Image (cartoon, rainbow over all chains, first blue to last red; front, side, top):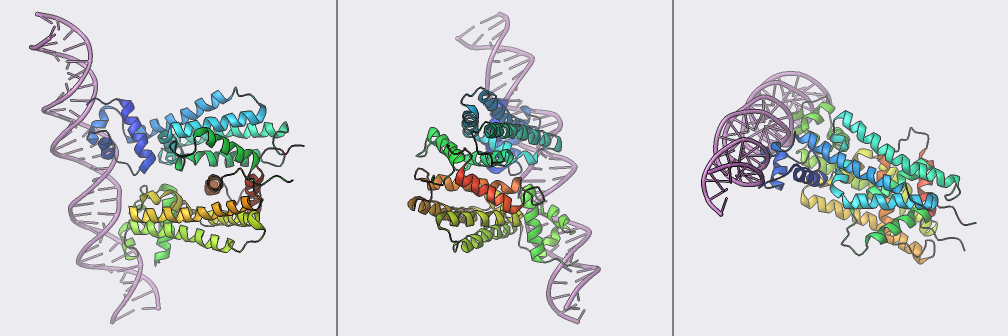
Amino acid sequence: MKRSRTDVVAAAGRLFAERGYHGTSMRDLGRELGLVGSSLYAHIDGKQSLLLEVVDRGAAEFQASVASAESATGGATGRLQALIAGHIDVVLDHRDEVRTFLNEAGALDEAHRDQVIAARDGYESVFRDTIASGIADGSFRDDVEPKTSAIFILSILNALDRWYRDTGPMDRVDLTDRVSAFILEGIRAPAR
Amino acid sequence: MKRSRTDVVAAAGRLFAERGYHGTSMRDLGRELGLVGSSLYAHIDGKQSLLLEVVDRGAAEFQASVASAESATGGATGRLQALIAGHIDVVLDHRDEVRTFLNEAGALDEAHRDQVIAARDGYESVFRDTIASGIADGSFRDDVEPKTSAIFILSILNALDRWYRDTGPMDRVDLTDRVSAFILEGIRAPAR
DNA sequence: GCTTAACAAACGAACGTTCGTTTTTGGTCG
DNA sequence: CGACCAAAAACGAACGTTCGTTTGTTAAGC
């Protein structure tokens, strides 16, 4: 049976996401593809480079998403909502790569791990800057801290894949609306 | 040098939290304590039972915290704030056990993993019920979903240990206030 | 001096990876 | 269309290493 390099990377993403890098053996990965472990080396350099490829794929999805949210209209609020919607789609459409990107970067060698951390920080800064500009133009409260709020928002978004299923009672538009409402309005009832 | 069982469990928590269960070898753990790997077996049954003990310790901290928040005053809002403050203290005062509890439960055998999942769900339900009672008495908006909101709140709280340091510019009271404000009020500026 | 802790050595199993060989594949030509 | 063939893919066996754990023995503490 002919397998392509892409098949191997996809299967690696699945297993790394599910069991972690150290919890996945090359023989496990082979079995996932109906192969014996050593056969994988016809397609890839080794386990570590496989992890790198999966993680890079996750990072690239976020980068593509943020690029397309650049053009959002509706001021800081509209821009933030576009960032949120884009993030949700990335997390849910590329679960395995994103999970690996978020949870298994620590298994990379130091140089690549530092790259991932820098990429995450750059991504976070887009949220931070959007919040800061919303404070400046009066869209957001002036007592929120951009840095802290950005982290709170990303904490919610990055945890979505742990519990949300497209097959559940809530569709993705509902989900996005609820996330946005929670972030923008909180849960307290407005004073009457 | 005399080591106690407690020392071993504490060191295991440290390494499991930092490198993951599968990323930590018994020889690594021995080295952490100035021992050779096989010496650990004078204190513990094996690696798996060590993981179980660390995870149980994390679960117990949450249980103790929720028990002491039972007596909070101030209606649903006060109760929720007490739950938040308690959760923050548990996460930051028991980082290693909590991290292991949250991230490494998948490395447990199925029976114990199911126990952990049940414990987490029970804990989440306290948040859910508090939110539901706050909706019922008018403290919270009536268009929030208790289940979804509880998950959002816990997503923020469980991610704290990834970025917050007590040594930073923000002390723990500040942190707790910012988290509470974000959850209760959101970030949007109130209409004028 | 008796219990407890730590050791060094060894166990079989599993790890990532290499290697030489066999099988499968897709294109080319009679 | 079937026969051939180079290239690619999969294999089984083996490598050196590391894994979790067991065992018998030595050192340390009350």
